[in-house]
Image (cartoon, rainbow, N blue to C red; front, top):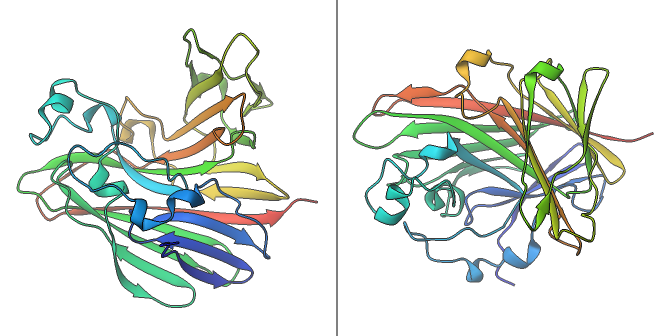
Length: 298
């Protein structure tokens, strides 16, 4: 197998990163557990990686990645793929950011620093710093720099994937929660509940009349923390709590996507956090971070 996952470890936590595939975090383990996040090991072989250009289609590596927001502007600022620009395509994400090769700037036993290439699609490059602290918490930071020749405006979009049957919760009042079900002949909505100020999906397989369930929820949380139950562990994601006005109106500070199908392997839970929408002058940078705390359930 042509996998080149690079591992860091500390305090019982192991994190695996694929530099050649967007610096994606593809593995997280505590005390020798199986992988706590959802990724596709069959795609870790870099020999299977597609050539990266403006026509590259999406490949479901999953794991933790960094995109830019707002999604509706992913392809409108470039002229390399006219079809996607004219359509204001909201899919796929910029391949130069999530799938191109990142250079390892520095690495030791507990931390890794990676730098991605300039994207002619988005006009930026991304650096990632991932470190496991002495207490076992995982620090994940993304730095976005305007490496183009004109100002650009984006937010930083962290996206961590889990199995779609994992339960999650985030504290938020009902008026700060917007659920958008994916309804079609094939798809029905994902059940959810708001109980004592906490939003949770109630993941279920679709009924026999449908092939899938999917919903997306946009949330402004009460506190900057999301909990996910994965295996025998609770995986908490912490982040900065920004004001509503700092977040692009098309996005949410927190976004949760939950998808299930009848078969195995395609169920998906996406835990997403957006930084403030920011205009960057040429050469200017912005940063955003998450801290992950992983504990064994009682």
